Structure formats: C-alpha cells, structure tokens
Length: 324
Image (cartoon, rainbow, N blue to C red):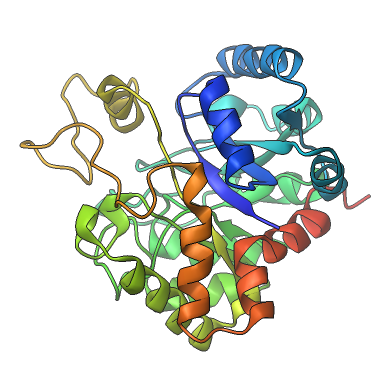
C-alpha cells in the first residue's frame, strides 16, 4: 500500500496515470491555499469533473474504505485538504459544511498568523487562539484532521495537546536534519507523535538536506533515525510534490492576498520559482525508490510497509469519521 500525505500538483491525465504507474493507492491533495469558501467550492467542482472524466484512474476518497475500493479496482483514492483555514472564513459553522463536501484535512495556518494559530514565519508565536480552540473542538467532532505543517512551534504543541484526536504534520522533515523554518524541532515532533499523531516526510527540496542535491540514502537514513526516536508507527510520506506547476503558483502560495511584495519564503531572490526535484523523486512513478531506500536502511518489512502507506491508512480509518 502506498499513500502520499500531501501533493499540490497541476493535475492532468498524465499525472493521474503516473500515480497508477507508481502504485499510489491514495493521495491527500491540497484544494485551497488562500481561497474563500466559495472559491474552495469551485475547486471541489473541478475535482468532481475530473472524477467523471477519469473514472478508471481516480475516485473520491472520504474514508479508509475508499482506499480498499481503489486498490480493488486499480485506482487512486483522492482525499481533500486545505493548507490554510481561509475556506472557513470567520464562521465555525463552515467546518461541518466543508467536511460534508469532502474535506478531510485543514491546516490551522499557512506561513502567517491566522484567526486560529501562528504560522511558522511569524516572529512571535502566541499559540492557539480563542477561536482556534473552538475550531479544533469542532474539527474533532466532525472528523476534519488538524494539520500543523506550516504552523509555529508553540501553536503546534498546543494543538497536539488541545485536540481530542491525533493531529498531523502532513509534509515536513526534522529540523535537526535540515534547518528550515518549515521543518520541525524535536519537541514539536514529540508532542505530535506522543499524542498519536502522524509526521509525513517531505521531498520538497527546501525541506531537504542539501536541497535538490539531497541523496536518497540521506533521506531514507533520516527517516530510519526518526523511527528510532519517535516510533515508526507514527511516520508516513507526504511528498509535497508540486509537479508541473508554473512558477506563478509558488508566488500565489507564498503571497496570497496579504502583500503587494513578492515573499520568497523558503526560496531566495536568485531562485524565486519552484526548485528542481531530486533525481530519485521527480514524479509519482518514483515511490519505489523511496521504498527500496527504506529497506536498505535496515528497517523491518513491517516498518517500511507502515511508512509507505499502512500508517496513513490506520490514521485515516480512525480520524475521518464523526465522534458522534
């Protein structure tokens, strides 16, 4: 079983076919960065059309059972999530509406402060806000997973403690291996995993040691050492693959509507667009490279199977349904 905890590709029949070639049984896809509720609904509509156009390749995912169906029918189950709470605007009632439409993950922040928590690029981290506590409670109730991939340290630790259900960092790596504002320090990973949560490892070059030149061996050895420390059962893959996106999209991701200036974020002024992917993971056909690399580290077959998808499957099964 292969499950990717996060992608934001420029979706096409080519990529859907590559997912099948790579044996990707399920993928969590971003359908909102800075969109309002109405704009997010239009993105649901777009995906509904793709499900109609390519019924032999993809299907909508709402529960772990849909992954079983996808595997039985040779398709990829697509699960939806947001990298910002902007789709709920300032209305807690929209949490349930969006879950009903098919959302299964929502980040409490992108890189900036939100109404709910603090993003990882802010100078001061004030933690989970009053509204944030209420929204976490509502997300727990309906089965919308709290994702803290772009959130600051204190906010993430508080979210893990406040949430009655396990939370996720769907796409990031350990800060000790590759210092970056988006990567996670030991106390953050510990808070998430000790409360039953998941960490998905990212292959986005800004999150990698040596960036685009990171080796498969270095990446997989990092995963093995993380498994030693926090337990392999809490780990998965969340590639953050942004395949075929134009450079204008990365500007939209970083800037949204809040600034008139270009925010290069984890990039630099000399390289404002998307970085080159490492040669061992350029698209969905390369999941086998990661699986083989993990085996080469000495991880057990059960641990490798869990990291490649089994752990996400269990997490989906436990956390996508209503607590009622």
